[in-house]
Length: 286
Image 1 (cartoon, one colour):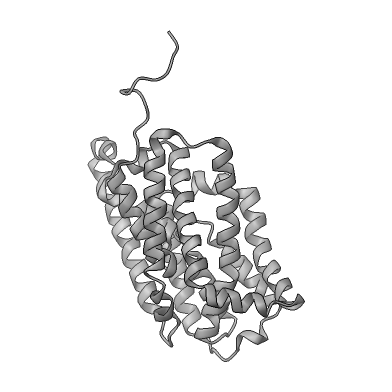
Image 2 (image 1 turned 90 degrees about the horizontal axis):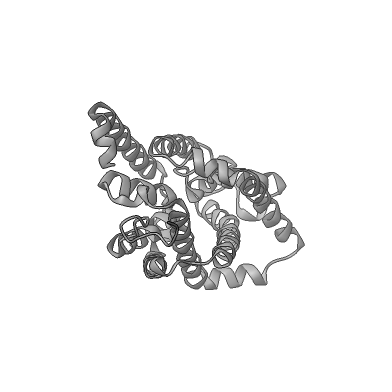
């Protein structure tokens, strides 16, 4: 007999406390070069929350909500910088922004689904964290003598390629673009500015596109509270953490962030070994 699924057979919902905690985590993780998407997957997995067992569309919708909260907060928190950049926008700067946005737009449009299916596991996220750390360490060793006004089409494409790589969970858009800018020889302060100016249009554009898809598909009533809470917490934590941008922007090495990423990757690798050794019983528990 057909009909609506019973409460017992319906897919599990996202607990509100987990939505709140992941939203609070998302803001700082987005502003630091440590991968917000990686943390949103790894923290529930390490804590054995039921997040990984949720319906794939629900997880995707929740992550869109987190990014929407972050994008709105960034536009407000960086409004002076965004306004100044808009006033100074000319044909050359517009072309550079377009060049930096083109690679992630193309890769996202063609490979989004395969990336989500195959590269969103704890093992691949740990690999992304480790590889991103290596790039950051190498970038720190490069001479940093160039200023932002010297950026050309090759720099824009390098930032675009970095953003394409950051579609892999664990790599980090912030970390990848910072590393790319520093590898191109830009000073640490100007590398941060270039990273933000390249990433913000992509973050806002992707959020609007995915949000429109979500709206067209419809949001199940039982998930609306969790999505709203996650988005609100992400907005608040991002807005309250914008001072972290200045911390990264100071004349400091990326080595501490690289070390943290490697440590997290090691924790994930150890957990994977333990769960593999434990067998099906551990896997069933998460």
